[in-house]
Image (cartoon, rainbow, N blue to C red; front, side, top):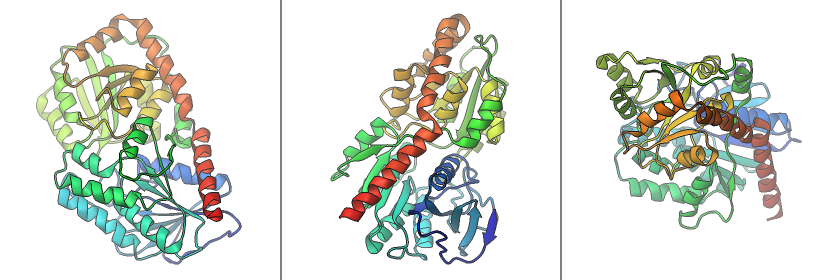
Length: 421
């Protein structure tokens, strides 16, 4: 990676379609940061000239990872990608409504120092859940006459409420919806999310389904990792949770619920986020040695742990089911790890697990469901192995090339429609 402190735009190849991607997280950020970087790599591989405007690395630790977050716009070159980093306010408490408002506003104001010029890009792509990024992209799309694609990974206002962040939610929803309508084209990552977007007053005429995918580097680690055993597990049953730990995941409540079981299990938590310390503290104070917790692992570590696990745990707070299919589901499926999903059955995650037979779907309001899960794992090898086989089969739907090709098709159509207007 080459670094240049100059903040002026440098369009290196005007013959290629020029795309600006606006997003808060980007490599080396984990979670969405890895996926968004992989998309940009894929677009460059397919002949696009890609620029990215993003924040300095901070996620999921919620801290200034680089030590350089501030006023200066920093340019980096990641292969063929032109990356510009903008300062952002990083909340000390991501669950504070006021701090989240400042967080959103700071990113918009920081980006706004560099407006998009007319003719500078052929298209813009902005990712939500950060409304500050959507506001910047919408403002610049109109003033520069650049066609804008909005990709909704999550509904920010609804996610804030589901995560336990207080505040005037309805006002946030109206602001969010108004900003969405500034985009020429919408897409999202699951069929239930399409239905949620259609409930917005005056939605886009066409809302594209563009699921996330297994990004290249993690796929390589999973392919080279020790394969999972071809036989059902014995005792103890090994459970793995890996990923963000915030209000929406409700992981602490799940751990408390699980601790009431007499089942012989070992649960390993690898995570970071706004409520990670609450979980770590509870494990330390509970004295239940069936639980252990470490930091979020790198991709090689995740691949190794998925090979170790008998079941991959994904939790989602009740009422958060209108949001999205968690991206963490995809590596679990690819590895063949059966799922233990604790969520609303009618939400995208619940539907994905149930309709494809990926594992065991547990409801929060039925305490005996966990005992039934452990009974199946111990005593019903045919069902257990069917979960693993179904996970692998469904994982093919989220192949990288298939996902990026969808994005290329959407971009080309957006630019073509804009040129004929």
